Length: 197
Image (cartoon, rainbow, N blue to C red; front, side):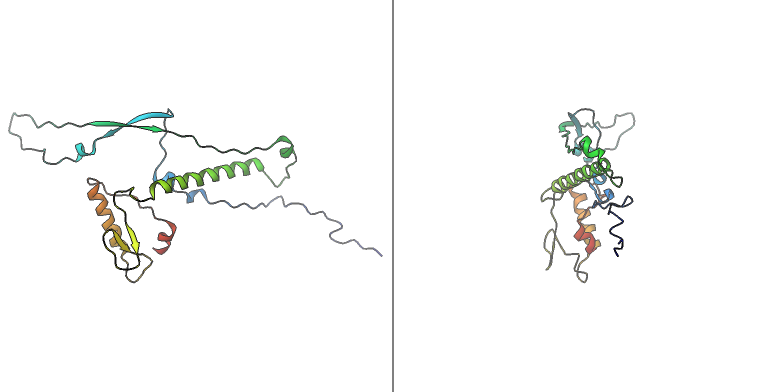
């Protein structure tokens, strides 16, 4: 006698309460946190730059006798230009595909997430390429396995011999002296360095 089996009485269908996608948490991207976006009204324009030397000049302050004028100092401005390039990415869903979509899916939302994620990745790569290269910050520092020389530190994964706190303090001091007194207030390191610390 023929008996019904579980597979004979059920046709497999996708779950309606579970889908799987692989996306990095948007909070893991740092480009906009380190260098926040600046809103602009025009695609191209100019901006002003105050001369750093004017604000950091020494030796101009003088003692003043009664009823005399204080010494006068001035400042200068320069200009630079910007171009706010537009980057974009799109995906398409035709009406037939949308009408045939299973209840478990929301492909419009998934498509928006996919595009946003790819744009975040692209921005992060462009940011890292622009600001993690050589000769960008005035002095390049390198971690070495052996004895460090000028602009080198012992690799921080050497837990016995490295001195990361002293190294960062020294790097900050060097940057501060070369920048006219501006103390760095943000430090960005790659994942390997962060993991070593």
